[in-house]
Length: 539
Image (cartoon, rainbow, N blue to C red):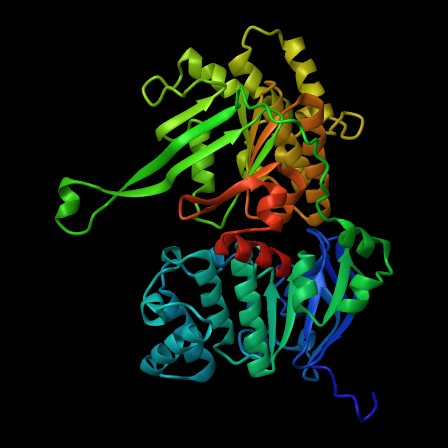
């Protein structure tokens, strides 16, 4: 290296990682300079997180070989005692899900102070004061009060800020950020990105970002390195990689954006499939002190919502966490009691005493749901045949076993899963499938009873970009073939653009703006909608 070029802070040479006989990282090479932001990009299973964890030798029982030179020292050659000095000191890490990374038994202030005591040898009082200052640096509101809170008492954005404060407590030279914004709403993503960028510029630390979010990479990183199946297939300046991708996988990733392909069905004003007027959902809440012994308070989660969903149409409901969109969906599904008017095909739910009445059974057949996370919504104890056929056992109990199996096979074929592709398909269990395949199983389970309406609650937010595109294309095809109506719940503006005819924007339980997608998203009137659309463009 010539004298004008500084030595890299981190240099990774021929990194290889094995779990038993299976090699998951194959000869990865990259460098990272002080003050630089490098994004390690790839889908689930590409090896990017294992690569990052291996730098700190945190990848469990993995066998790691190669060189990881940090400030001239090979981290793979250090003793475990020496590595404990590096971890959380010169190199810190922010994990994807702060709720599982933070200690639920300690306040967030104590957790930040613990790092300060260990790494900077401060007294308990000094560490406590500096922990509050660090929380304030991350932009968390009321840092003194938040320092005394436990993780479950904070919002997602606040928990992520607390994790960042912990990571910065030791003034690291290198920060590893593993999907730091995946679990956050779009406006919070922008805030966290701006925060990390500001802190990185102030401290001069290097940042290695692990993500599958290409918009985030385009906005945030200086350089990008693309991984596929444990191989580093392409790397370079972000502008070069996005403008002139060389590898076929990179081109496929960049091209995997939601595409609009919906039939602009003529409106039928005579009969809405779903109609609400002044719909409210209220929760009882405990009151402090003696008052709580005698009566309850009230929290209104959905406040006077009016909506009309027409046959063969998609109504998108967009908003941040806590906006009331999922609560509204549960009320429409008949899972929560509500006030005001709610009719599906002109019928109302009979709640709560006659929940299993014949009228309710008929409505439940016509309204089905697909949840956000198929892994948690599909029973791990049931086979594919039992999962998909469950609705038939409830709504068509008189059908013969042979007929039920045929209908299960047809439902699976409709979503692109066949015995030819997946031998023994009907007897497999959910854990034997990928995330996208599990979501297809969830859609098949909903479709088998031939519903008129599917409630889609964040159906693609847990999926990689290429799989997301496939699932959206499947839903678009099914809507055309079956004349389905969709109630699409999401915080992803681009998914709304691709799928919806009309959109409602919710915040704090209220509808702020509603209308055709082109009108609301291309010319938003409400300041909140304007911020939401702008954040989606930046994030």
